[in-house]
Amino acid sequence: MTVMETTGTRTDICAAPPQQNRRPDGEDRYTISEVVAFTGLTAHTLRWYERIGLMPHIDRSHTGQRRYSNRDLDWLDLVGKLRLTGMPVADMVRYAELVREGDHTYVERFELLRTTREDVLARIDELRGTLAVLDRKISFYADAGHALASERSR
Image (cartoon, rainbow, N blue to C red; front, side, top):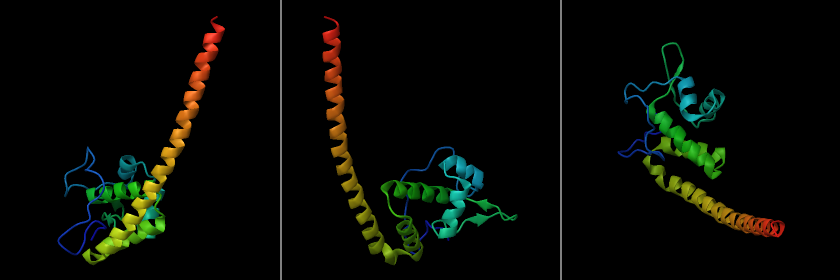
């Protein structure tokens, strides 16, 4: 069972629509180097995600090489979004565990994501304040530059 599957009738869908240039489901067996090209992650990072339980089950070829599916790529997209939120790796691993445990963990998953959302909104507010300061400074220097240019042209 992949990280994306649950035991009930619903699945935990990922953050973004499927990427272009993917193989059809059933024929979607990507090598680690193909996944590196799709995601921009390193092979080391992909193996680490597997080791820590963030990507717990990656199918293998008959020779033992990892084979990723479209669902795995979707999951990696979600993990990338969670990383951008600043969510700690331990919380991402906990979220992955909850997804694998099934539908009865919806409340805990909801709380984990809600808390992360609150953190993101607080950071956005902080960044808006920072942006306002930058805008004021840029405006100041633009005005000062125009004034200097006018003085020089006299």
